[in-house]
Every structure is written in C-alpha cells, then in structure tokens.
Length: 81
Image (cartoon, rainbow, N blue to C red; front, top):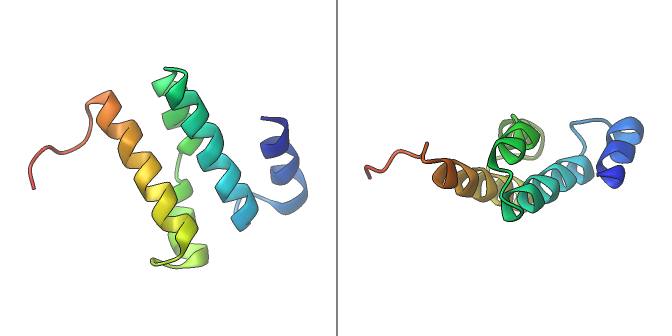
C-alpha cells in the first residue's frame, strides 16, 4: 500500500507503474478475501490504462483480467457469452 501511495504522489494515477501497483494491490485484497476493497482499489484503472497505454499493452490486459476476476468473485460478471 505504501508503494502505491508513493507512486500516486510522485508519478500520478495515470503512470504505468502506478497502474501496475493498483492492480497488484487490488489482487492482494482479492486474495485476502476483501472483494469490495479490491473492487474499490481497482476503480477505473483498466479504462485509464486503455486510454494511456493502449488496448493491447501488457498492463492494460493484466488489469482487465484482474478486474474480471474480482467481478466474477463478486458474482457481477455477465455469465452469458
């Protein structure tokens, strides 16, 4: 959490390092069972990554996957193909 806060302060929320740390912290919260916290932490990071880094950037794809895992765990994912 401290690394994320430091990155936000020095680099801002739209920097790729900060975006990666947001995903990592949300993933940690997810693994600890704090799904609401994970979802809050993830926020709009996937959309920001898409806008800043592009659709096919590694961090964008990872954030999309992590956000999807959180949604599935919360039962919010669309179950239809």
